[in-house]
Image (cartoon, rainbow, N blue to C red; front, side, top):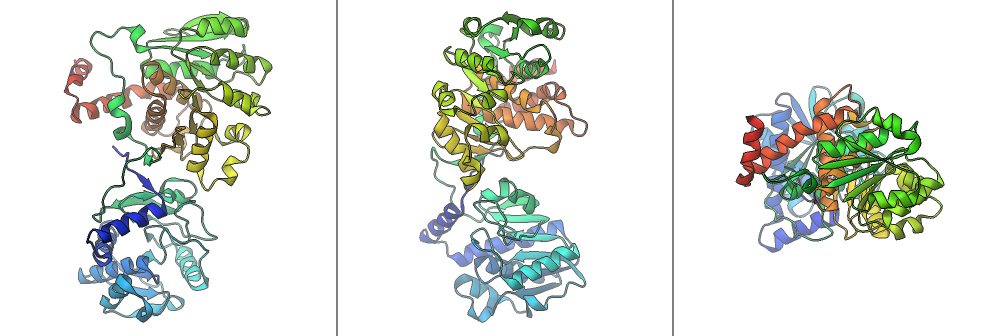
Length: 505
């Protein structure tokens, strides 16, 4: 179900300090962490010699514990350390001295006969590039092509920025503890981590808060999902509208509208310029179609909508700007995408002034830059950029990418972690805008709707796989919805069993 918190390095350090203050010694936490690493190595790489590279701090202590437990279990284990283990202090020093086998220097490692390397040199708290010996050792391992199991994070990767501090190795697996850190979920860091295993070492969960960062998943929003009742009729499932582009640019709006239909919006209307009417009419079935000639007419048509999508192939024209401003004067929530960001690139303050807190912006990084110039570059990571953008705009921001971030004006944010490269196809983002709008139309709060839509969108893409085109995404949504319905029933919503029964009949 995902939904767990994502921690900064400081928050993880505070969790360790709380445990120690509550009576759990660091040595106990280290023993649990090393055991988790040993178990992961046994399960993923059951045969062959293990080389454990240990640093001078607690990360190295975890490595020494793992080495001892692996050796006690019968594995052939070699250990190399970055310094004199006699000078290691605290729990890490105790763990190092409990290792009874030989310890070589990093500069003396040999990789002949090694099956897997455990990188326990430096963890998430590293703030500077690797020094010469660790750098050379890790480059030697990577050049040999050996699988790497990283402890907490691959050494040389910043836990908070998700950026390599010069060099970091690409791990096959990363074993981390308690919760994921930013570098496990954000690009480019997550590409260095490989498979990420989060292991429980007995720490208390983080305190809830408005500014908490979570990994996106159904546990965050499934309880708010707008399932229909037996008495529900189509008007109660919401009125969604999508603004079409002109005659040669109509497909994007239809993709968004189709997404809204498939996610459950009761009435979906395509608002079409006159020159696009015939093109749109030739492709519509369940969608309704209404023409408009001016921004004033668009305002009148959209005045009773629950939500309106504007931007997909709308055109980079003064007309799009006027149409957006007209929609902003209605009572409808807006899902804003694509060309709208471009038409406001020279006057973003006018754009922000027209937005409400229930509006959702869905830019990719290039579009984000147009209305939030320089914000991505000067922010420590994408999460902080999206949070600041949501605060500036006073609206929900869904910053698209392999590591999509959704942020609310109050600082709450999630990172979507189930993306697939098959979604990198024209029109995929238009479907996402429609899925988001379709959930808002049914009464879901905008932040939860954006989170749910991003997750469903990615699951639909993953379910289809190679060969995916954007038209496939709405058609895959029903399968994802059926699985969510099963989760909701199993999670304690027995009143929804009737929907499952009807579906199975």
